[in-house]
Image (cartoon, rainbow, N blue to C red; front, top):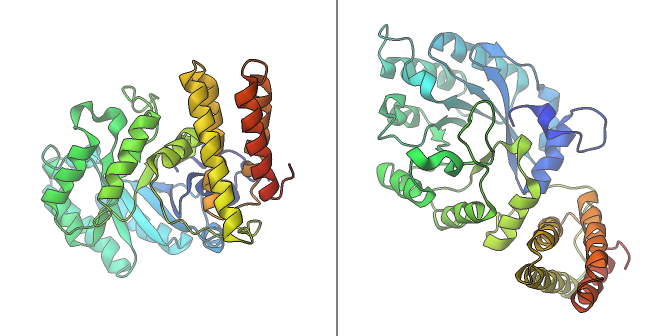
Length: 360
C-alpha cells in the first residue's frame, strides 16, 4: 500500500483506518500487508503501533516499507530504526531502485554504502524480518549490490513488473534467472498491478491472462518463492485479480481471522456450493462464447468473489451477499434474450445463496 487514502472506506467507518486495508487484504486473499511510512529520512506518520495491533488481531501480519534515494544514506537508516521502534511492525522492507544505484556520487563506494545501511538496520533489529525490493535484473543493475543485501539477511522482493517488462524480459525468464543466480535463496517476487500514471507512464495494467501466468509460474516455484506481493495493492482491480485466482486454480492456503465468518456444517454442503459455482462459471463461459463477453466477464468476476470468500471461510462477508445479489440481477436481465441459460443460472445462484444463509 502506497497511499492508504487510495484504499478507500471499505469498512464503512467514514475514515481511513486499518480496517479498510484489512478488508482489502481479505478480498485479495492476502495474509500480510506492506505499508509505506517512510521516504528517505522523512517519516510519514501514517501508521501507529496501535494500527499494527489491529492488523495482528485480524490475523494479518503488518510490515512497513520505505524508499531510499541517492543521498543521506545514514540518515535514511537512522530514520528507519527510529520509525520501526515507534510503530513496531512485524517487518521492514526498503525499496531499492535507480536512485540508490548512483548514491552519493563518487564520495563513497556503492558496496560501502550498502553495508552501512544494512549494518545499522541489522544491528538494531537482529531478529526482525528485513527485506529489500530491488529492480529485477541484476545483470543490468549490479550496482544495487544484491549479494550484500542478502548477506545481511535482507530477503529479496524483486520487482517482477510484467506490465513494464519490455526492457526486462518475461515473467518465466525472471523466475529462471533468479533461481539460477541465487540457488536456495528464498525470494518474494512483487507483481505489478497498476497502469500508466504519473510515475510510470509506459505501464499497462496487466490482463487477467497475465495475472494467471504469474500465478501459475509462481506456483511452480514455491520451493524458493513461498509468497509474493502485489503492487499497488491500494489501486488493484479486485474483481480481475480474483477471477485470475479462480482461473489459475492456484491455492494460497489462506487462513484469515474473520469474526463474522463460519464454515458450513457439513462437507456435503461445502461440496455442493463448489459444484454449483463451477456450473455457474460454465454457464457464464458459454454466455461469453455466444458473443456476450462483457456479461460473461461480469458474471465470472462476481463468481470469483463468492468463491474466494467461501474458500477462506468468510461466509459472513458483505462482499459475498452483494456479489450474489448482483449475479441475480444480471441474470434477470439476460433472461430476456437467453431465458434457458439465465433460468438455470438463477436457480444455481439461489441454491448457493440458501446454502450460505442468505436466503434463496
